[in-house]
Length: 454
Image 1 (cartoon, rainbow, N blue to C red):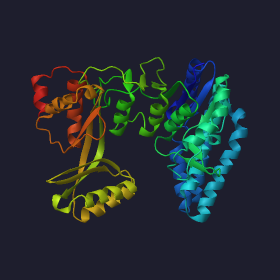
Image 2 (cartoon, helix red, strand yellow):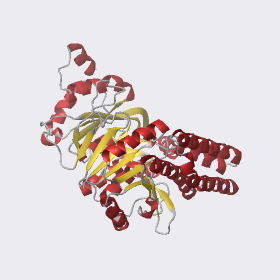
Image 3 (cartoon, rainbow, N blue to C red):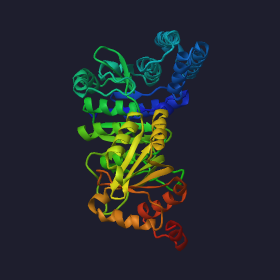
Image 4 (cartoon, one colour):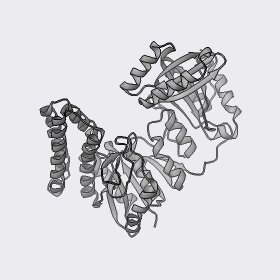
């Protein structure tokens, strides 16, 4: 038997209509059983966090208004499926639990990371019970098997414990059971609820796929797989039928939003196929991410990715490396993403994206202490296994940049990508032309060539 794990995100289970579509996919993909991982209904996580913030600030009535809205939304969805009576007995204790948590936060005047994780678990579990009823499967509690450390809000799985705990699941699923469980959640060895942090639902699915020795993990989202570029900038962007794990990791690092980097590592260790498909168009193109790289023409680029919102800190050469390294450490601890640290005799350039208020404050403090700060930058990456076969091709592609104000090259450890910094204002012109030249490999018109060269 081929064992598959399917994961549906919040948009794929966000309404009665969406759940019916997901149920049809489950019936098609898992006729002999398997595991389905579901996220909270779209918007639920944000609303629970808003309720926690209100409660911890002493605004319990506001928090309870959020709770009432959540209850109404879930009941409406279940009623639309004719399943309200089926799930009410499972849901009522969960809503009561969330009410108790919010009341406790109001009394303490604080929402701890541990408390928020417990509250967020309610949203994931409500969705899983509803999906189990809709899909004709059995709900199983993911916290039975997903053991983590106690870093609430960003817990890391204990892989050895997960493999052992998942053995009974593996046997039952191999025998034809259809189980539905939550994503995003884990538990410490003491039984305390944790969440896996950014990209946690996808990571849950791939970790379970690894532990269950699955042949395939499918991530169902709202796009036709991984695309060659952002379709908002490149309307002719198309799905990539097959790509390597290295290409997927590079795209994730440099801006592609379909998969989080943490969700890719289990596939590399276990060797299962990772498939990205569109819930809205199940028969459309999809992307297979393979542990063995597909053949690529030497020098070929698979896709162009970018990430906006970067800031550059420039340190003079006279300060040496210690100040920029310490700045990088402080920023990362505050939640910033570091994209590069380039040092030369002329000085050191640190490129980061301050993704949290704490990181933005550290950035302001650093700029006030001496380093030159520039905002409004982006990182652009050319990605493709063809670059591994012909490393010099990256330089030939970069020659097309002409007079672009490139802020620095960020090669990193990947041999399948090359990235560089450009002002955000150039993305709208640059990404389509890079896609045309490097991915489609079509000759540019004289006017396009002039524009690309600045």
